[in-house]
Length: 564
Image (cartoon, rainbow, N blue to C red; front, side):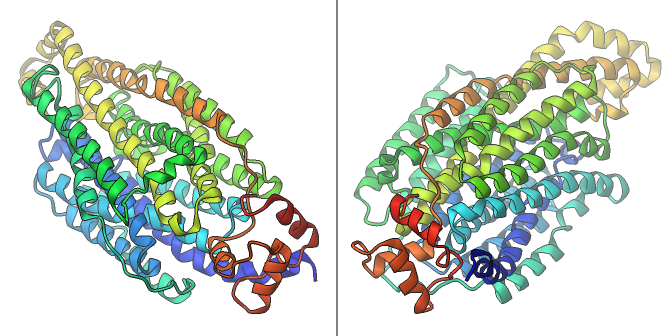
């Protein structure tokens, strides 16, 4: 029997299950991206300032980062299908509730709850994929996830801009509801995961509290230092000191816990440790720059929300093409490291070049810079999770997968906070420096200048596209310099990411799924060759047979062992 004839039935089993996961990912991405181009309008309408703008983003990223390892640990303990459906429900209900926000505090609160569901979707989709698809075959399916993410990331801002301009920004928060219902129904019908052995579970509640405290204190300090209070102040000592103490206690608790939230033994594996470091930079590049690129288009180039969505397409195009093409090439040839190295180089190039933009930079150049950054993210984001799953212990697959995702989210969260703080500080300084120019431009407006001056002095983010020409050019220049300055923060982190990628152990990708590895381990095939083990398991109907029929592939598995 040929390999292709054996793989076809397996693909028919995998694709329906993947459809529900893909739709869940689409829901998560759409609900997040549909408001990205509308945020300047939303924050303006709710009388928010730059800190509020940053926290509307950061609140979701913070709770996503904190909840990701929790969901990952729960995935090692409970029914994964039920967990991902709960995550979708939490995410969409919180998103819909955000549409009724009356002020920025209310919006930030609902966005925080939204992040709890997003953390589940981010962690569980990766874990479930490892259950049904081997690392070697997963590249081509990762391409599908990349395509869905790209469609949602491109379509979300465009749709959000159109909805905002036509119906009002509140409708952006309701658009994901029908897709969520469809995702739940499809997962219920098609997602069939192998039964897991019942065992006594213990949740590390103290670890959850300490991790949340450490991350939250750090981000609150980064966001407010230099504006609400001085960098060298009592508040800084209390927040930074509290974060350090909570982090140390978290490590102590995890070392003593029988069911640690983040098993610290994972860091004994060089692949996990280095992939984690690289993921931090990827998260910063992906979340930080994408958030502030939308603000750049509206605040520095005077674009409307719809126009801003169109103008960020080059970045998503780079992500889409690189994700699909690289995923297919990894599955075809089994080599992953050259693509990760190339992705790391592109991350550095994209972030550095974006730090040079001005309000009047040729848009063709800005598009090229965005495409380079998108390609770097597409090459690294999913593949860092892939190589960790390739070597992780099957019993810790949830914790290992969510660990990488957690640090990626944490990098993005800290990145948005730091970049937002730098942007706000730089903008405040530049507004002071350009006060004379602004005064002259406002005086030239005559009687209409009073309303413009009041709007700028309110502290709220201005609606740049509605400002008079003379004032608008000055404000655009201020925000362009401020946003470019914030992009520069991502450059050294991207360099560290590339260094970590260079030192990653170049281990070949195994063709065994997590389910197959667990079955082989339980059957105690330590002294049996992989071909014999696979044949026996296939005969009993325990696992899919897509790889058992290829003698050449089986011999290669026997020579390389479970890790490739």
